[in-house]
Image (cartoon, rainbow, N blue to C red; front, side, top):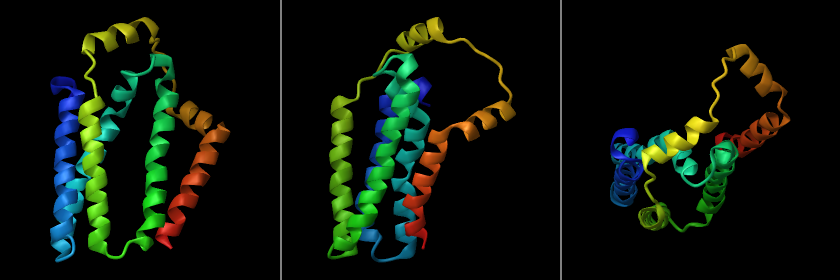
Length: 169
């Protein structure tokens, strides 16, 4: 969809759907489980589009050789946001108030998205990428071995485990 209609348009529509779910959660999320489930499903729509388009968005800001590292750095923001949300929800006076804080924060983020997101012409990315991409065939086994040998993969994996273990226990 994003290749056909543009990243900004698709992410914007997904963001509005998710924002609708976050706002409706204030009213429906405290009255029934079905309402909460529907609102949570709607609020997750943006995550799907974000995962599919994050590389394209970062690729429009940074040169091709820096996209991978910048996507990794930017992706850590969601982990820190989850940690901040989990650690501050106990300070909220009620669930409804927590839902209102999330709705206001989500609305501010959507406004900032529409203000600052610029659509990059697809030809620019293709021309930039064609000069630098060299496709090399590598087996899955070699990729797994390289990942297991990388100390940063282990550090990130252990860190993510330490972030999520307290939320499960």
